[in-house]
Image (cartoon, rainbow, N blue to C red; front, side, top):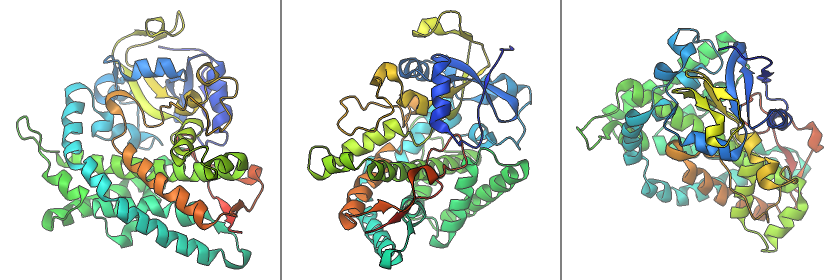
Length: 414
């Protein structure tokens, strides 16, 4: 089905919020063009998006429900290929999603997350010691590189039992997954390296299981029939949990620090006790969704948007793709008022979709919140005079229309 005049998405993500505003201006649902001319419907209305995310006529399985995939039109070199090609609960539908999520949930338990708290506190302290050393005598420190990035990487590495010396490679390949303007050669290289590293990890854990999530996933069985994750499902589940569990937390911590440093009045409210660190986290997730737009979902049948409370006359056709525009939804003036763009920790309605909604709600959300809840107060208590080292307009975004964060966060400690 052809549609006129799609909004072309900038694959570099240079102006995520400007682009989000342009998406909203075209209505609650509008056609956009992703890299390589791939069309999708971007949904920016929070209410409409919630309804679609919970409707059984919306799928995440391209093999069953995306016409372009079924017709062989999506090449492995497409920058978003890994996002749709993986076979795990992220791209599963119906009973298959229920099976895969149950298997992963058995391994990724609330107990396992809670048990990480002392270790997260220890990692945070050690990283802040290094930041203090690096920032002596007024030297500029890149907090994204020295704090926001290594904290989730180290937590994820220990959670999955990844050897410490693989941290640099893990960071490189995860960055590649989110690099939405990558060349075909870069896409192929990242894909190959990521799966090679995870296959090596799985082989090691099969030989010597440990008290880690990889070993638990290998051993996990579904109660109905005793099924396990297939080899591809296991690798693809690790791809999902390592990449999503890392990048979203990096961006959450990065964006929260940036928001507080550029809104000293809001930081003062937290320090005076008039707002909490949980307020900071939830408002950051709303106004700076760590994942700006999430690919992809697909219409199982023709979906008339007026049936979901959307506009009359707009139909997402069977087999067409849907993009969840979380950054646009998080600043929607229809829900949050005319000051929806403003970072306000005292805002009454901080409800957001940053971790998704419905059956695909992010399993790792409690861990991401835990890391931010420990990292942010520790940083600002340790360095009460923290300030940006460059003007705000000189900060550059990461090279992605999916990942919403900064390329670097240069600061002075005092």
